[in-house]
Image 1 (spheres, rainbow, N blue to C red):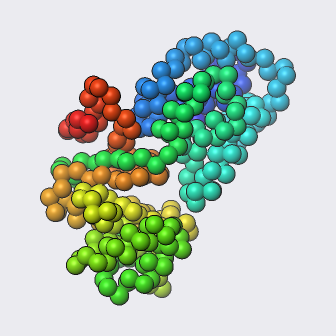
Image 2 (spheres, rainbow, N blue to C red):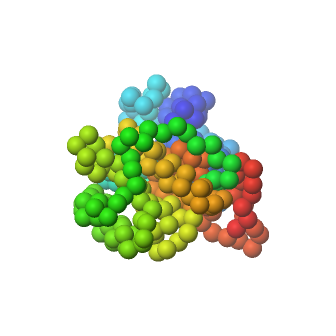
Image 3 (cartoon, one colour):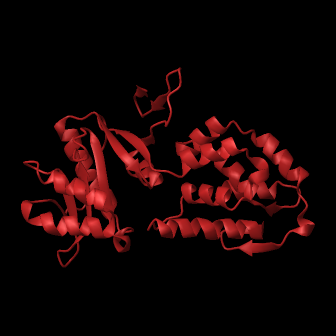
Length: 287
Protein backbone atom coordinates (compact mmCIF):
# COMPACT_ATOMS: atom_id res chain seq x y z
CA UNK A 1 0.00 0.00 0.00
CA UNK A 2 2.91 2.30 0.71
CA UNK A 3 4.43 1.41 -2.66
CA UNK A 4 1.12 2.13 -4.38
CA UNK A 5 0.87 5.53 -2.71
CA UNK A 6 4.41 6.38 -3.83
CA UNK A 7 3.59 5.35 -7.40
CA UNK A 8 0.55 7.63 -7.37
CA UNK A 9 2.51 10.59 -5.99
CA UNK A 10 5.00 10.32 -8.86
CA UNK A 11 2.30 9.96 -11.52
CA UNK A 12 1.17 12.81 -13.74
CA UNK A 13 -2.15 13.53 -12.02
CA UNK A 14 -1.19 12.35 -8.49
CA UNK A 15 -4.20 10.00 -8.42
CA UNK A 16 -3.97 6.42 -7.17
CA UNK A 17 -5.42 3.89 -9.61
CA UNK A 18 -5.80 0.08 -9.54
CA UNK A 19 -2.78 -0.27 -11.84
CA UNK A 20 -0.65 1.36 -9.15
CA UNK A 21 -1.70 -1.46 -6.81
CA UNK A 22 -0.53 -3.95 -9.43
CA UNK A 23 2.85 -2.23 -9.76
CA UNK A 24 3.18 -2.16 -5.97
CA UNK A 25 2.69 -5.94 -5.88
CA UNK A 26 5.27 -6.47 -8.62
CA UNK A 27 7.83 -4.35 -6.76
CA UNK A 28 7.68 -6.72 -3.78
CA UNK A 29 10.36 -9.35 -4.45
CA UNK A 30 9.68 -11.77 -1.59
CA UNK A 31 7.14 -14.56 -1.07
CA UNK A 32 4.43 -15.23 -3.62
CA UNK A 33 4.64 -11.67 -4.96
CA UNK A 34 8.28 -12.24 -5.84
CA UNK A 35 7.36 -15.45 -7.64
CA UNK A 36 4.57 -13.66 -9.53
CA UNK A 37 6.92 -10.83 -10.50
CA UNK A 38 9.43 -13.36 -11.84
CA UNK A 39 6.98 -15.51 -13.80
CA UNK A 40 4.69 -12.81 -15.17
CA UNK A 41 7.62 -10.99 -16.74
CA UNK A 42 5.82 -7.64 -16.59
CA UNK A 43 8.04 -4.57 -16.93
CA UNK A 44 7.20 -1.91 -14.38
CA UNK A 45 8.50 0.87 -16.65
CA UNK A 46 6.14 -0.25 -19.41
CA UNK A 47 3.21 -0.35 -17.00
CA UNK A 48 3.99 3.17 -15.80
CA UNK A 49 4.13 4.40 -19.38
CA UNK A 50 0.77 2.77 -20.12
CA UNK A 51 -0.78 4.42 -17.06
CA UNK A 52 0.47 7.82 -18.22
CA UNK A 53 -0.85 7.15 -21.73
CA UNK A 54 -4.30 6.30 -20.34
CA UNK A 55 -4.18 8.90 -17.56
CA UNK A 56 -7.34 10.90 -18.23
CA UNK A 57 -8.85 11.64 -14.82
CA UNK A 58 -11.42 14.10 -16.19
CA UNK A 59 -13.78 11.22 -16.99
CA UNK A 60 -13.21 9.34 -13.73
CA UNK A 61 -14.90 9.67 -10.36
CA UNK A 62 -12.29 10.61 -7.78
CA UNK A 63 -12.63 10.23 -4.04
CA UNK A 64 -10.67 9.74 -0.82
CA UNK A 65 -9.89 6.56 1.06
CA UNK A 66 -9.18 5.74 4.69
CA UNK A 67 -6.28 3.60 3.45
CA UNK A 68 -4.42 6.36 1.57
CA UNK A 69 -3.60 10.04 2.02
CA UNK A 70 -3.77 10.67 -1.72
CA UNK A 71 -6.77 10.97 -4.04
CA UNK A 72 -7.97 7.62 -5.41
CA UNK A 73 -10.38 6.53 -8.12
CA UNK A 74 -13.65 4.87 -7.19
CA UNK A 75 -12.28 1.72 -8.81
CA UNK A 76 -9.71 1.52 -6.01
CA UNK A 77 -12.50 1.72 -3.43
CA UNK A 78 -14.30 -1.09 -5.25
CA UNK A 79 -11.16 -3.25 -5.29
CA UNK A 80 -10.73 -2.93 -1.53
CA UNK A 81 -14.40 -3.63 -0.88
CA UNK A 82 -14.16 -6.84 -2.90
CA UNK A 83 -10.83 -7.78 -1.27
CA UNK A 84 -12.35 -7.36 2.19
CA UNK A 85 -15.31 -9.51 1.14
CA UNK A 86 -12.86 -12.29 0.19
CA UNK A 87 -11.15 -11.93 3.55
CA UNK A 88 -14.48 -12.29 5.35
CA UNK A 89 -15.59 -15.20 3.15
CA UNK A 90 -12.48 -17.14 4.16
CA UNK A 91 -13.07 -16.29 7.85
CA UNK A 92 -9.75 -14.45 8.03
CA UNK A 93 -9.05 -11.37 10.10
CA UNK A 94 -6.27 -9.67 8.12
CA UNK A 95 -6.36 -8.41 4.55
CA UNK A 96 -3.50 -9.96 2.59
CA UNK A 97 -1.98 -9.85 -0.89
CA UNK A 98 -4.06 -12.82 -2.03
CA UNK A 99 -7.32 -11.01 -1.32
CA UNK A 100 -6.07 -7.89 -3.11
CA UNK A 101 -4.77 -9.75 -6.16
CA UNK A 102 -7.98 -11.71 -6.56
CA UNK A 103 -10.02 -8.50 -6.29
CA UNK A 104 -7.85 -6.78 -8.92
CA UNK A 105 -8.44 -9.65 -11.35
CA UNK A 106 -12.13 -10.34 -10.71
CA UNK A 107 -13.21 -6.69 -10.85
CA UNK A 108 -11.60 -6.42 -14.31
CA UNK A 109 -10.13 -3.01 -13.48
CA UNK A 110 -6.64 -3.88 -14.75
CA UNK A 111 -7.64 -5.86 -17.83
CA UNK A 112 -5.84 -3.36 -20.08
CA UNK A 113 -2.53 -4.18 -18.40
CA UNK A 114 -2.67 -7.99 -18.36
CA UNK A 115 -3.03 -10.86 -20.77
CA UNK A 116 -5.12 -13.91 -19.93
CA UNK A 117 -1.86 -15.75 -19.23
CA UNK A 118 -0.82 -13.10 -16.71
CA UNK A 119 -4.18 -13.37 -14.95
CA UNK A 120 -3.89 -17.14 -14.73
CA UNK A 121 -0.40 -16.93 -13.23
CA UNK A 122 -1.48 -14.32 -10.67
CA UNK A 123 -4.56 -16.29 -9.59
CA UNK A 124 -2.66 -19.58 -9.44
CA UNK A 125 0.36 -18.33 -7.54
CA UNK A 126 -1.11 -15.54 -5.47
CA UNK A 127 -4.59 -16.56 -4.40
CA UNK A 128 -4.45 -20.29 -3.65
CA UNK A 129 -3.08 -22.25 -0.71
CA UNK A 130 0.60 -23.07 -1.11
CA UNK A 131 3.01 -25.51 0.47
CA UNK A 132 5.78 -23.83 2.45
CA UNK A 133 8.98 -24.98 4.14
CA UNK A 134 10.91 -23.81 7.20
CA UNK A 135 14.34 -24.79 8.44
CA UNK A 136 14.36 -26.28 11.96
CA UNK A 137 18.04 -27.18 12.18
CA UNK A 138 19.18 -23.87 13.63
CA UNK A 139 15.78 -22.43 14.51
CA UNK A 140 15.64 -20.33 17.68
CA UNK A 141 12.33 -20.98 19.38
CA UNK A 142 10.51 -18.10 21.09
CA UNK A 143 9.27 -18.18 24.65
CA UNK A 144 5.62 -19.15 24.35
CA UNK A 145 2.84 -19.27 26.93
CA UNK A 146 1.88 -22.90 27.44
CA UNK A 147 -0.84 -22.41 30.04
CA UNK A 148 -3.74 -22.80 27.63
CA UNK A 149 -2.09 -25.25 25.20
CA UNK A 150 -1.47 -28.95 25.74
CA UNK A 151 -1.14 -32.19 23.85
CA UNK A 152 -4.34 -34.19 23.29
CA UNK A 153 -5.34 -37.30 25.17
CA UNK A 154 -7.93 -39.93 24.24
CA UNK A 155 -10.64 -38.08 26.20
CA UNK A 156 -10.37 -35.15 23.77
CA UNK A 157 -11.44 -37.19 20.74
CA UNK A 158 -15.14 -36.34 20.52
CA UNK A 159 -14.78 -32.66 21.40
CA UNK A 160 -11.91 -32.09 19.01
CA UNK A 161 -13.52 -33.88 16.06
CA UNK A 162 -16.73 -31.84 16.56
CA UNK A 163 -14.77 -28.60 16.90
CA UNK A 164 -12.80 -29.22 13.69
CA UNK A 165 -15.83 -30.30 11.67
CA UNK A 166 -17.96 -27.38 12.88
CA UNK A 167 -15.31 -24.66 12.43
CA UNK A 168 -13.37 -25.98 9.43
CA UNK A 169 -14.25 -29.01 7.32
CA UNK A 170 -15.24 -32.65 7.33
CA UNK A 171 -11.96 -33.51 5.57
CA UNK A 172 -9.93 -32.01 8.39
CA UNK A 173 -12.06 -33.77 10.99
CA UNK A 174 -11.41 -37.07 9.22
CA UNK A 175 -7.67 -36.40 9.38
CA UNK A 176 -8.02 -35.86 13.14
CA UNK A 177 -10.05 -39.07 13.49
CA UNK A 178 -7.29 -41.00 11.74
CA UNK A 179 -4.65 -39.36 13.93
CA UNK A 180 -6.28 -40.77 17.07
CA UNK A 181 -5.61 -44.27 15.70
CA UNK A 182 -1.92 -43.61 16.36
CA UNK A 183 -0.47 -44.66 19.70
CA UNK A 184 0.41 -41.05 20.48
CA UNK A 185 -1.42 -38.50 18.28
CA UNK A 186 0.84 -35.53 17.49
CA UNK A 187 -1.88 -32.94 18.06
CA UNK A 188 -1.95 -29.90 20.33
CA UNK A 189 -5.11 -28.10 21.42
CA UNK A 190 -5.72 -24.61 22.81
CA UNK A 191 -8.35 -24.13 25.51
CA UNK A 192 -10.26 -21.09 26.73
CA UNK A 193 -10.89 -20.21 30.39
CA UNK A 194 -13.84 -22.61 30.49
CA UNK A 195 -11.74 -25.46 29.17
CA UNK A 196 -13.39 -25.46 25.73
CA UNK A 197 -11.31 -26.11 22.63
CA UNK A 198 -10.66 -22.95 20.61
CA UNK A 199 -7.79 -24.11 18.41
CA UNK A 200 -5.67 -27.06 17.36
CA UNK A 201 -2.53 -27.93 15.41
CA UNK A 202 -1.08 -31.23 14.26
CA UNK A 203 1.88 -32.72 12.44
CA UNK A 204 2.71 -36.10 10.88
CA UNK A 205 -0.99 -36.92 10.70
CA UNK A 206 -1.99 -35.98 7.15
CA UNK A 207 -1.85 -39.12 4.98
CA UNK A 208 1.03 -40.35 7.17
CA UNK A 209 3.38 -37.77 5.67
CA UNK A 210 6.49 -37.19 7.78
CA UNK A 211 7.93 -33.71 8.39
CA UNK A 212 4.47 -32.38 7.46
CA UNK A 213 2.85 -29.71 9.64
CA UNK A 214 -0.91 -29.29 9.53
CA UNK A 215 -3.75 -28.98 9.64
CA UNK A 216 -4.00 -26.08 12.08
CA UNK A 217 -7.00 -23.92 12.92
CA UNK A 218 -8.18 -21.40 15.49
CA UNK A 219 -11.77 -20.26 15.93
CA UNK A 220 -12.43 -16.87 14.34
CA UNK A 221 -12.97 -15.02 17.63
CA UNK A 222 -9.57 -16.16 18.92
CA UNK A 223 -7.37 -15.39 15.91
CA UNK A 224 -5.69 -12.22 17.13
CA UNK A 225 -4.43 -13.37 20.52
CA UNK A 226 -1.43 -15.44 19.47
CA UNK A 227 -2.92 -18.92 19.83
CA UNK A 228 -1.99 -19.92 16.30
CA UNK A 229 1.59 -18.79 16.88
CA UNK A 230 1.76 -20.79 20.11
CA UNK A 231 0.23 -23.95 18.61
CA UNK A 232 2.56 -23.75 15.63
CA UNK A 233 5.67 -23.54 17.77
CA UNK A 234 4.65 -26.40 20.05
CA UNK A 235 4.46 -28.60 16.97
CA UNK A 236 7.66 -27.29 15.39
CA UNK A 237 9.53 -27.85 18.67
CA UNK A 238 8.40 -31.48 18.76
CA UNK A 239 9.39 -31.90 15.11
CA UNK A 240 12.87 -30.57 15.80
CA UNK A 241 13.19 -32.84 18.86
CA UNK A 242 12.31 -35.82 16.66
CA UNK A 243 15.23 -34.85 14.46
CA UNK A 244 13.53 -33.24 11.48
CA UNK A 245 15.78 -30.73 9.74
CA UNK A 246 12.88 -29.12 7.87
CA UNK A 247 9.13 -28.83 8.30
CA UNK A 248 6.75 -28.72 5.36
CA UNK A 249 3.68 -26.58 5.99
CA UNK A 250 1.00 -28.09 3.82
CA UNK A 251 -1.52 -25.93 1.97
CA UNK A 252 -0.80 -22.74 3.89
CA UNK A 253 -3.67 -20.30 3.42
CA UNK A 254 -2.44 -17.21 5.31
CA UNK A 255 1.04 -17.37 3.77
CA UNK A 256 2.15 -14.13 5.39
CA UNK A 257 1.43 -15.61 8.86
CA UNK A 258 3.97 -18.40 8.38
CA UNK A 259 6.49 -16.06 6.73
CA UNK A 260 6.49 -13.92 9.85
CA UNK A 261 5.89 -16.61 12.47
CA UNK A 262 8.61 -19.10 11.54
CA UNK A 263 10.52 -17.73 8.53
CA UNK A 264 8.78 -20.16 6.18
CA UNK A 265 9.14 -19.71 2.43
CA UNK A 266 6.81 -20.74 -0.38
CA UNK A 267 7.81 -23.82 -2.34
CA UNK A 268 7.77 -22.97 -6.08
CA UNK A 269 4.67 -24.35 -7.75
CA UNK A 270 6.35 -25.59 -10.92
CA UNK A 271 9.72 -27.14 -11.67
CA UNK A 272 11.47 -26.23 -14.89
CA UNK A 273 14.33 -28.01 -16.58
CA UNK A 274 16.74 -25.92 -14.58
CA UNK A 275 16.72 -26.40 -10.82
CA UNK A 276 14.73 -23.86 -8.87
CA UNK A 277 15.94 -23.12 -5.37
CA UNK A 278 14.49 -21.90 -2.14
CA UNK A 279 16.93 -19.78 -0.18
CA UNK A 280 16.74 -20.33 3.57
CA UNK A 281 18.90 -18.63 6.14
CA UNK A 282 21.85 -20.99 5.76
CA UNK A 283 20.87 -23.48 3.10
CA UNK A 284 19.52 -23.89 -0.39
CA UNK A 285 16.98 -26.60 -1.08
CA UNK A 286 17.12 -27.76 -4.69
CA UNK A 287 13.80 -28.82 -6.18
